[in-house]
Length: 287
Image (cartoon, rainbow, N blue to C red; front, side, top):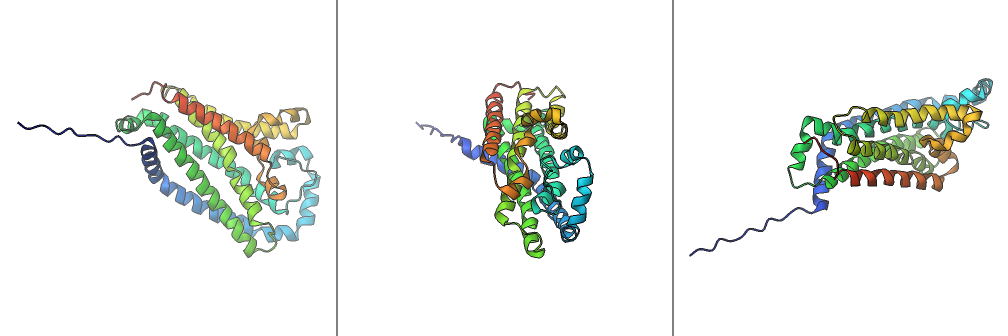
């Protein structure tokens, strides 16, 4: 009489499934990250080529800036322009690159959030993924981790040419540490946008088509309305409502970090991600 041996099936741990989801997501986006980083690197070196001439003509440029309406300059710069000098390193980086960096990365993380859940529901790939021993929450955390790493890699590709510029062009006199704080500080507003997008993707059914526009409105609408609030004195009191009031890379490069602003953005991002993590298990997925 033979006794059949029982097989013990080992279930993968939540951490191992999270890492597997992360590796798959990062593998799928690696070429995009590479070419975006290369393009960002080259673009920053290109704009830094003009910095020495900006120094040489700083007096004329500052006089020209003073001739423009203050409200218009505040709208484009996004901050106090009373002592604005376009040749100051922080101001130059802010006006030529940092604002567009935040908007670009914000749009990218929105796409990643909806590709991870909403679009994956629609094309059936989420059905395949969840047929494996992967929980919804592990899947969500793995995709969030990929978004965070992609953002950090692009920010690193942005910091590196600025750091090299301090050696190539001695006129660009700013410490690498301040540059790092200014550039990597963009991680927090971008991750707030990512948290909002992931939350919408976890709450709104994939059959609806307004979640994406809401996320882009949250990003670009916040920027446009903040510009109005900055430039119109009667609307100045509304500035704290908008995300862009809590991050200015140029100001960080000049003056250092406002830890209160960072703490608030971290808290808001954590709330968004926590709600998404809670809601993903309750969502009626189209799978």
